[in-house]
Amino acid sequence: MRRFLPPLTLFWRFFLGLLLAALLPLLATWYIARGVTSDNAELLAEARLRFEAAQIAARADGWLWLNFESLSEHADTIAMRAMLPELQRPVLIAIANHQPWSQLVFTIGLDGVSLARSDSLAPINYSDRPYYKTAVAGQPLGQIIAISRTTNRPAWIMGVPIKDEQSKVVGVLAKTNGLNELTDLLANTKIGETGRAILLFQDGKLAGMTGAVFDKELRDWSKHPLYLNRESRGGVLHYVDEGHPTVAVLQPVRFGWLVAVQMDESEVLRPVKETDRTMLIVLIVATLMAAALAAIAAPGFSRPLVRLTSIAEDMSRGHFDHEIPGTERRDEIGALSRSIERMTRSLRLAMERLTKNGGG
Image (cartoon, rainbow, N blue to C red; front, side, top):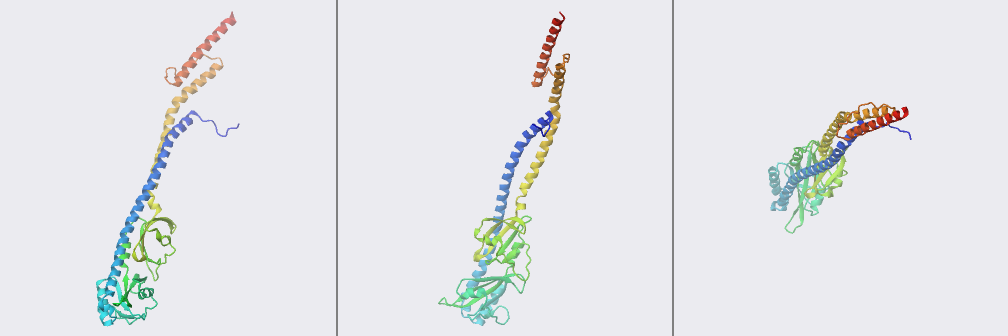
């Protein structure tokens, strides 16, 4: 059968043997270390994302509740129930002054037209606003987010029903809130190199995000994996965002708002790359050491064998006067040398007898 590869010399056999003996345990160690490092890196990243999401969600939840509770309490006062502009306007101005993020506070009558305002603008018809429709229908809260005409930044517009003593809706108390309290929190959140915090409104509109710049319209994230998986409630999500594999944690907030914190998987798995780099260096060093050891040790085995092979070839041609090297060694090569030495003596004696008998 034709051989496609030449036979391996002793050096290469010794080198490959050492290499296998060194690399197999290292490769097994690499595989195990890589798996452990990957699991630990993912758990650590998930824990960090959960912590950041919980912190931001708690702040957002508290701020949203503060505004809702304050507005609901004021809607239940005699001044609001009276639905008289001269009684309502001082209260509206006080609310606006007390909460610096309040851009406008106003009441709306059952006809949808504003009754009293914290500013001096003329009445406006709000009958087509979703938050007005929800509140005037008796629901505890109507809300939307939109780009504020005053600041060109996202604003939360909310409305609560004003009810008389018989719990009949007589109007709506509404307020426009700048989201600076929340967007500044997101902007100042530092999560590694690629991490960012995200705030979504209940309909999927982007209310705020680390590094986001808003223009005239809010971004619609209703098709984004974060919004589509909003029911995961604290679960870990994996998806591709802007071409980058991403890991994220989603945290629900009251009134249907959502907080998410995400990070590129490449940053999450950076310890795995470091492990790969370290183990690759170890493998290269082990390969070089195996080659060096083979280069040093193999001649000690190959030279005596080459010499003994040469002597055996000379013996096959009838030359028995060689001095056999290595007979003093205590290993297998020494045993082979002594065996060849005994065979040489035996063959020499046999040849001498043949010669003597032939001559007689």
